[in-house]
Image 1 (cartoon, rainbow, N blue to C red):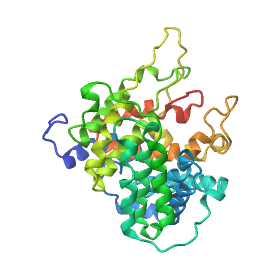
Image 2 (cartoon, rainbow, N blue to C red):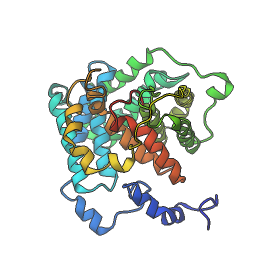
Image 3 (tube, rainbow, N blue to C red):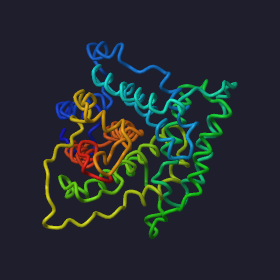
Image 4 (cartoon, one colour):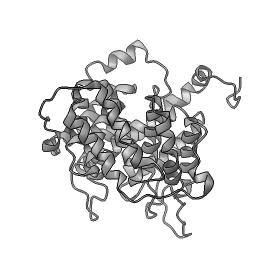
Length: 354
């Protein structure tokens, strides 16, 4: 059966493309199971459930919705490590940076006063989301990003479903719901996608439009990071049993991924194209001292233009989301191209936006 045969099933596709997937350094991203040796290699390296508790606490203690990035990043880093077949050294490198974030903002991750948990109250978090997502785009999709991650984490750590924490998480959506709304244009812009797969493919098609920006760091990018995390969050909402809520967010998603491609002047300088998913998921990337120094210092426009913007959860969230999304894309070359477009900022501090 040929690769472009629309009747090819998931297992056949995996078998055909396994060599290419291995080249992306994430052989588990497409859902095939780990063999015994790979499973053994991860023993002792996986993150424990305390990171779920820390992440939820960090979100609940946020002073304003933007500060919830730190806690959400811890949750995403936990799932990045536990849901993918990463080698022990890479997991250790990711864990080291998660621990650095928790240490850096210790007050935000300090345990909340204990209350009785009510697992049924978890549903209040997605319920509070609707006013923040209907009718268009607000705050780059952060309401659905935060609500999706925290709902997933609460289901995995139901003892954290305590009244004060639930109210604080709902409060993030209430804050974002008061933000200015970017409305969709025309009837198509307001129309829901046919299904979640159509939405995911629309995101990748949108990213491909920006391939001309690769290697041109002087051109500011649209917000590729949050386009990706926004897409995954809506997908996750549907998977968790909230399809109507996810569909209510489609209009805002269409607005998000429709950002125009910036003009490219003929004389724009071009640098080496070195952003690959394989590079970012390598042990050397996470253990690079220059990277660690940048991530743990405040952002400034002189010598640390990305800085703790990356450590504030963006790197963890985009990698977690992207690993989940690429399992739904059969075109491996498109995945490789989109990886470069999406991750260029994370390997080149001169690139702004994205």
